[in-house]
Length: 400
Ligand SMILES: *Cc1c(COP(=O)(O)O)cnc(C)c1O
Image (cartoon, rainbow, N blue to C red):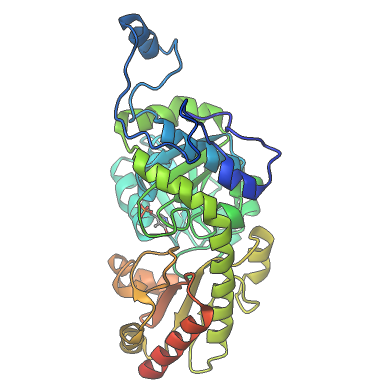
């Protein structure tokens, strides 16, 4: 619902994170109130009529809008410096709604190939079944983007850094090519978070988040968000789609996310410091294959990453030398770091993409993406970094 974020645009980031969007009730509570209500009551039949005619701006039903959800939307909008924000029930609900609300049969979508598994499923399987043409390109190859965007295109979709290979897409250049083809650019900004990278500044039209990741960041709740400055898209396509299909964010989860935003800057600083220290530590271990982290000078796109992002993020990927066997031995030997497919959590988590998150792709597509059987993705948490290094060292000793 938001179009004028509550709060002050002159506030600096940390202030926006703590105070943005706060709308106190008449009880003057300090913490944001949790409005667990599905509906709202009207003082008169006339008022209900006016609300439904759109003549009176008020809460009608929590599938449309809810005061706690709106506080979260306003706070995130202020942070992203976007005019509009809509919360959704999960990151995937945000990704699907951002695309499905605007695509029609006969439209064309161009997407980077390296995507979160469910995003890949939507573009490879669901959209084509609705008569939408979808084309995948290597997101790091501008020539492929240029060739694919020679024809009129409705939407471009990409993720940078990508999961799990941490490839970087040049946001400014791809947005320019996409706009020349008439496309709106949707960026899945989960790995970077709104603090490290602001895709709207590089020309993106829509930014989507899984707030399940760093924004909650404590493994408690699913959620998502869609942000944009495109008022026409919001009014004529996005809001009607969300209202009538119902991927609404729960007020309880919105309340957790408000609390998550309050500590996001502190948590992310530690995440990035720990991840960089671990990436450097792993890089010094000669028995390992590649160590991938956008903040390492050895990352093939380090310069581009540092132009777009203010730090390397919380995810480090590493290649163990003997494929699946050594990767499994390594994962099974970890004592502090948990085996889990989630990421962006206070707890460090490790996953084996080839047999879990990217298993559905099959061996050829994984090879095309560079996801080998020895690859392990680490989501670096907030524990003491020396404890994490010791845990990784003892697991490597057991694995190799
Ligand atoms: C987790 C994730 C999603 C999906 O979010 P959910 O909240 O799990 O639905 C989408 N994109 C990326 C990059 C993710 O990491």
